[in-house]
Length: 167
Image 1 (tube, one colour):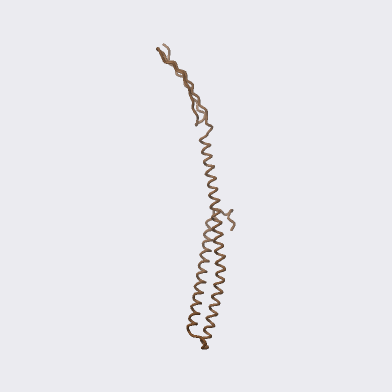
Image 2 (cartoon, rainbow, N blue to C red):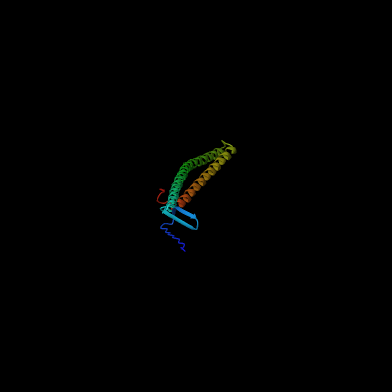
């Protein structure tokens, strides 16, 4: 009697492989003869290369997001500084308007004391002074609000993007 012999050679130098095989068999009468060849070749770390490419794409995406964040930050900061400049000019105009309203009130009081005007014009001048003060205070509040926005904005972005933002 002949022995059954199985010859198996298996080697896996790389974890990821592409397999191919072929066999020749003869089954008949009282014996079974089989010859098979199985071979594999490495895929040269294609999965690892794909992961590296994915990581590189994610890195590029994060750089683009960072660039967009910085662009939005610069646009927002520029807008805040434009608003601040506008409010500064409005503040100057409101202060001039308040001084003019106070001068008018003073003149109306003098005219009233001299009997050349009625109390209606004095009260109207006092209303104008109050409205000018109110407008001045609203402008001061708006300016301080923009200054606070600029400070919080720059504090938030200055920590992370100090070298990129020129403030």
